[in-house]
Image 1: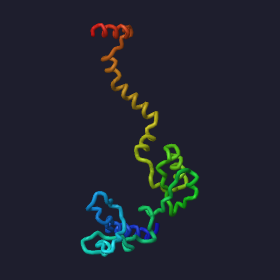
Image 2: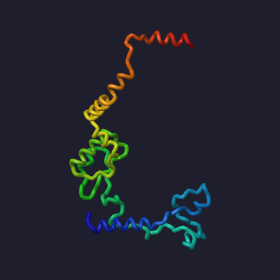
Image 3: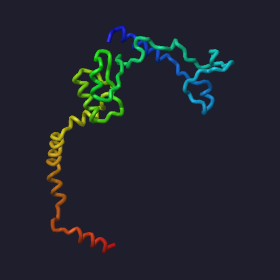
Image 4: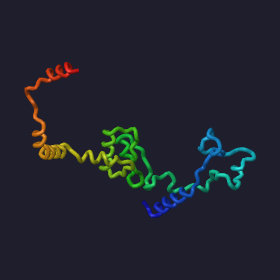
Amino acid sequence: MTVDKKRLLKKRKEISARRPNFVRQESWRYKRVKKSWRKPKGIDNKMKEKRKGYPAMVSIGYRGPKAVRGLHPSGYQVVHVANIYELEEIDKETEAVMIKHTVGARKRQMILDNAADLGLKVLNPPATIDEIGDMLDATSLEEEYELLEDDIGDDFEDDFELDEDLDLDELADSDKAEN
């Protein structure tokens, strides 16, 4: 990414911070009128006349720089991907991958692997919990279980001894008789 593009992205962020929330006329007055922007069109409309005390109207001066319009904050053009074949058409210098939300876990992992091989940037990588799950493989879990058994094994066997001669059916019958 060029220095000029970085500067324009920073400028776009500043312009966005100063941009007002454009609201529909009288949306603050009536619940039935939603806040979503609609252009006022009445002949004597105060908002359309840009009178003092009324919210700002949408105008061209609030737009961001043309060179960075529509870009991700990272400076890349977003390309939505649903399968591994779409990765081949991506330019890794100017475009970045965003995996669609409808893609399942197995195919998502395939896309992530192929994107890593091709050197592509993924804008929505998996959460860290998945990465932790991959690190905990079966061997490390078995080691943890063995350590736990060593710690509590002797005490557990002393406290609870199984009576092999105990008949569970007789126990159930004796409980019913008491009730």
